[in-house]
Every structure is written in structure tokens, then in C-alpha cells.
Length: 306
Image (cartoon, rainbow, N blue to C red):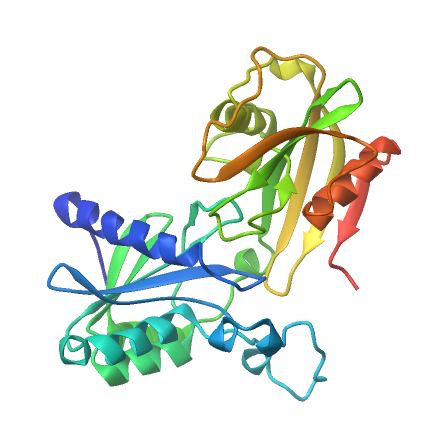
């Protein structure tokens, strides 16, 4: 394994961004993954994770098949790596030998999530068998390139650490109220609840507090600013999916500078004030839950737990 630097890193970031675009197409409810396979500076295959044929009829993650099924057999999605390899074999089979596979995930807002250590032996075996030469991952400490044989070995040796098992992902949301109406934005081209309304929101960046994060997101997404001391934490949701836990913090602010507008049209195609007692039908369920609890002055709830 080698970490890429300078020009090699810049080139890898280019392909990682292409993989992220694929990940935004993912139909998986738990993780948005994307892959591009590159040979001679050309994408020869690409894929994202989704149920077979992209069909909701083939979605099985909401069904309980009992304890006899191992974890790897409970996922219903075709892995992004598998789809990219199949794609390359269909249209560029003569080029797959010696190619590089770039893998990434994106979060709910379409931003790249840094990868952990290699662990999927199904993907590593398949890539090794078809002749892919390198796997490329973007770790916290940089973009690293693995020989596929090395990646396969590391995947078999992988053991989750306590830190990985207990990782919880924080997110922040902003509630703006004016004349008993609440501001909602409609998600577009993000790969997560596209076509549904939500609140201005985002994830934390390095060395950033919750208040700083939501202030930054408010400026980036709807063009407003406010004093951090005017923020009030009004609700928290502890959410659970099949693969991860998240804690969502909902802040309200009563006064701000500027009129909210769409600042990121590639991710948002509508911004509207709704009567807080008549929310749209196409609103993200857990966001609706948070708003309703906010109205009741209830500061905490849970979602996705049995």
C-alpha cells in the first residue's frame, strides 16, 4: 500500500469525485457507495450499490429471515464494486486487466466520506479474479493505493475495532420560523431522499463545533447569517440504520441576516415556507418527527430502534 502525493493525489481526487457522482445514484437505504474503474486515464466501468435491477421489488433489507442467515447474506444490494466490474466486463472486457478501482461513499448530503480499512472479501476476490491491479481508497490520512492481492489479504485479516463499532455520525439541522411558517428545502440530485423536503442541514467538518457547523451550512445553503449565541438546541434524534448510528441535532434561531435563497441549485430545487401545522407529504420522515416534537417542546426522540 502506498499513499499518493502531489500530482498522483490530484489525479486520484479527480477519479474519487467521479466515484462520488456514482454514489449519489445509490438506492441503498444504509450506505451510498460508488466506484469507477480506470485504465489509461479512461473510465472503463462504473457502478453504485442498489437492489438487483434497481427494483424496489428486490429490496430485502426490511425483511427478517431469522438468525440462521449470516450478516453478509442479509444485504439485498449489489455492491458498487460488483456493478462496476460487470459494467467493465460488458463494454471494456479487453481493458480490465491492470485497471485501478476507485471506491468511495457519500453522506446524506452528497459529500465524500473517508473510508476505513479493507474488509469486504467478496469484492476483493472478484476484483482479484478479473485482473484488477489496484484498489484505491480515501482514508482520513490520505488517498492510498493497494495492490489487489494485498487488499484481498487485508480484507481477510480485518477485525473491527471498538472505535469502528461504536462510531456515531453527528449531523446538524436548522429550524427557521416566521409567521408560524417553517422554512423547508427540497433535496435534489444528492442520492438521499431526493424530491423530499428537509431542513437546511449538514455534517461537521474538522475542528468545528455544532453551532459553527450549522452556521456554516446556513450560509452555504440558504445565504443567511446569525449570531451563534442566538442558536437554541431544540431537539435531538438518535437514529439507527442497519449499518450505522447517527445523532441529529436540531437548532432553532429567531433572528438572522439576509433573506433565505437557494445557494446550491445542484442539490436543492425548491425553498418554501410551510405552515408548521401543515407540513408537505413529501418530507423526510425523521425530519417531520423532529419538527412535531419541537412543537411539543420535547427535546429528545429516537428513530430506527426496535
